[in-house]
Length: 397
Image (cartoon, rainbow, N blue to C red; front, side):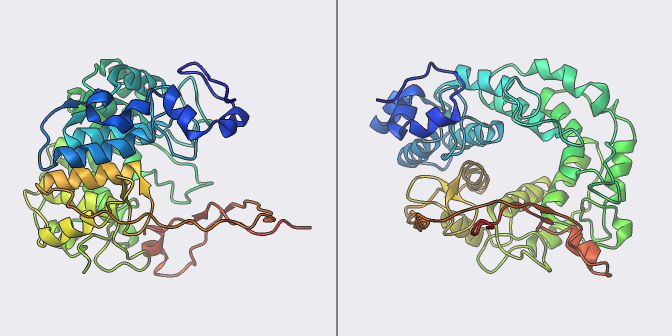
C-alpha cells in the first residue's frame, strides 16, 4: 500500500519512488482533471485562437505535471520547480485560462526560488540568477495575485548595478546577459520606473550591440556576431529604457527562419543550426517589438503545429518529448500569430529500455573547450555550451 503524504509535505526520494502515478495525482487533487475541464476548476478567459477541445487537451498535459505542493515539476521528479511552474502558468495564460489552483500555486511560487527559498535546492550561484525572481513576479501576475512584495528585492542594492563575474568561469568577466536585463524587466512588470537605474545599464547594452543591430553576451569589440535570443532580450530592455532601435535588424531576424519554418539562432550558424521553439519564440517577440511579423508566417505556424504531441504538450523540436517550457512558448507564439494548434498531434517518441545489467556513472567536464583561434569568439557566443553535463557507460572496474 502506498503511504499518503499531506499536501505540501516534502516527500523523501525513497518514498517518492514507491508512489505510483495515481497516488501522486490524488495528492495533487488532479484526479478530476481526467473527467474534463469543468472539474479542473479552470476559469475561461479570452481563448483567442484556441478551441475548447484544444484547451482541454493541453490542460490535461499541464495537470499531469502537478505536484502536491501546488506547483508543477518535471514528470520524472516528485517535487515542484519554479521554472516548470512558471511555464505551466504561462501556458494557461496563453490558452486564455486560469490555472485550476491559483492560490495554492501562488503560495508555491512565493517560496519556490531554487536558491533562495525555504526549499532551496542548491547554494547561490557565482552571480545572482535574477531570472528566477522575474519568473516569480510574472507567475503571480498571470495568476491574478499581488506581487508587490518583490519591489523590495528589485529596488535593492544588488539590482542597481551590472554584475561582476568570476574569472574562474568567464575569463573576460562578462556576466550572463539574460540575468543582467532582469532588473529592467522586473521593474516593468511591477510598474516601477526605470529612470533611477544608473547609466551603466544602457552602456552595458550599447557595448553589446553589433554593427548589424544584433546583440550577444560579450562586447561587440571581440568581433563575434549576434545571437537571436540575446538580441530579443536587448531590444526589449532598450525599449524599456526609451532607447530607439533601428528596424533594419528585422531583416537579420527574418533570415534566421529556416526552410522548415522555425527559427534558429543566427542566419549563418557555425554550430547548432537547427530550428528550436525557444529561438522561434524570441524571433516572433523581437519582430513584434519592431512592429513586424515573420516574412513567412504560415510556415512558422505549420512548424509550431508540428511540435504538438499526442500527450497534449509541445516539444522543443519536432519528434522530441513534450516539456512545459516548450508548451508555453509554442502556445504564446501561436496566440501572437492568431493561429490555432491545428488538428494533428505527433506520436510520442518511443523510449528504448536500458539493459538490466547496465552500470552507469556521470561525469562533468567544465573547461575552455574552444580553441584559441579567430573563430573562437563566434563559437563561444553560440548556442552550444562548453559544459557536457552527462555521459553514461559501464562503470570503471
